[in-house]
Every structure is written in C-alpha cells, then in structure tokens.
Length: 198
Image 1 (cartoon, rainbow, N blue to C red):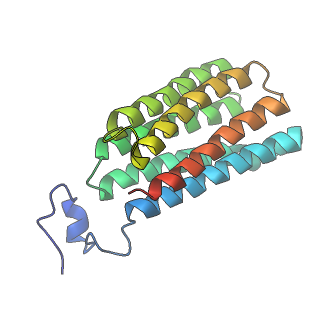
Image 2: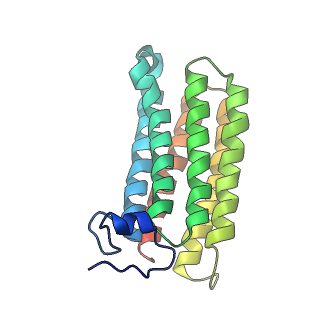
Image 3: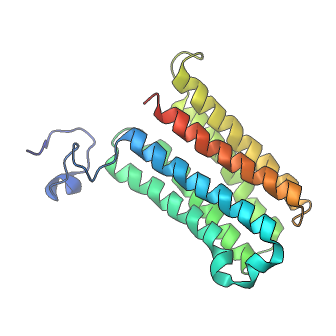
C-alpha cells in the first residue's frame, strides 16, 4: 500500500507505485555504500592512469573513463535528491560540483581547456563540497560519530583541493598523482564509515 502523505516525498514516484519501502529506493546506508564504491573506482582509475603512464591516454575511451565516472556519480547524487526527502539541498550541492569537475576534467583531457582553467572549476568545486558538508551535515555533539565522519569528509575535500593544486605543479609526477588518488580513496572509506551512523 502506498503512503501518499509522506511530506517531501516526490509525488511522481508515488504515482509510479514507488513507495518509501520499495526495493527500488535505496536506503541512506545503501546510498553511502554505492557512492563509497564509486569513489574506490575513481581512486583505482587514478592509480591505473598514473602507473600506466602515457599508454593510458592513447585510447580516448580509457582517457575519458575517469571524468565520465565522476559525472555519473554527480548525476547519481542528483538522483538522490529526487528520492530522498531529507537533505535535498545538501545532495544537490554535492552532486553539482562533481558534475562540473568531471566536465572540466574531460575538457582538459580532450585539449579543449588548459589545465589551469580546469583547475578554476575543480578546486573551487572541492572547496564548495567541503563547505556544503560542513553547513548541512555538521550537527549534534562534536564528539558524536556522525559529526566526526562528516567533519572528516569536509577536511578531506579541502585536502583534495590542495592536492589538486599541488598536482598541477607537476602533472607528470607519479608521487603527486598517487597522493591525489589516495585522497579520493579516503573519501570512499569515510562514506562507508558514515553509513554506520545513519
């Protein structure tokens, strides 16, 4: 039986027969696990790109896997805003920078945007994600697990912005690239940890 009186729940989903307890609607921990897995994929792609060197970029398909994955994760975050009535603004504000960052990275890789211009989109997007996480998710006791995992996500996003800037100083550096990929992997683990407290 459908529950039509759910405040903030999209009426279109209810009309389609998708209730709040539908197997098609992921629960918050499931969403965090999915996005955590997506960030693991991103970090492993970054490692594979760095270790393979220029060979990776000889295929346009391989070259575009990373930015396409980032954009898909961003659109996934926007989809969460349609099915999750809580924290809609927060998920919208996190998904948009992911899409913008993926778009800028794709333009850079295709030679349509210099790296410095791509960084003008990507670095502020990472800062925005940190501010968004702090503004929408830091509530409750500062010693509570949920507060601590969200605080660590915000700090890691700021660190990633710094890593991106550092990496831009020597794009070919293996160490700088691997540092960036480890930051992305840390985001994945933080999302898994955060799911424990939802």
